Image (tube, rainbow, N blue to C red; front, side, top):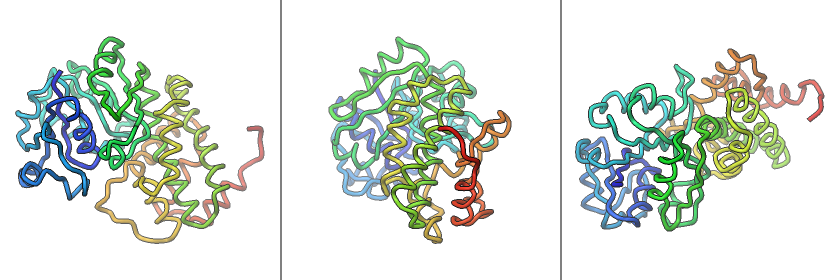
Length: 320
């Protein structure tokens, strides 16, 4: 199966670089000048500086050329996924579509696989998620990810096709669990960044990660996910990475909140929209999600970091 990556951000570029080790791969950029600059310079300095584009990688702004491949990896922001699918529906229809974004759509509460299935019901859909930073993948450092696909046979085929020398893929049919693990951990990363940014310490972060994981499980299981998925790479694994590294944009947003500084609004932070979507979904489902609700209050400046910490510490004492 031939492969293209739609989306020339850091993660999409890194995936294309790794996949080029298996053979020809096409990287699609919306902007023609950006695509030409990448093709000519063999770099994506704007999004992934310092990483060379291998010879088998072709950068293009021609959507028809990119969509001539059988498998299309959609490395676009979660909140832009639906519009990309709708805009290029004719080219995407019938292709195998693998979402490479993490989050919950703000106005529907749907994850990436569900959005694909709603817009392009005739196209097989899967999700690639898990603990990964673009810079690590581009440098050829070992990375393990979860490939979630409802069809077991297609999942096996994609696992073989998309595994590379440095990308090891683990397969699951639990798309709901994989969607929610990748989305909810971003909310917890904002919370952990705020804790560290405010100088509350590593012990507080560890407690927040643990209770945040309990929240993740609470919602995921209520939505029909499997507990083992949440304990795997797409849940616990991604939580551990994102809550402890300033390479994470969600964690860096939290750091800025904790330090009382302004965050660069041009940087896409999936966890911000996801926090609001999850808080609304939890309200409808009557689920207790105190950390998620606190993050939305911090994002909307309804609480200061000291007030947020005080509220969480004053919650009723109970069994773990």
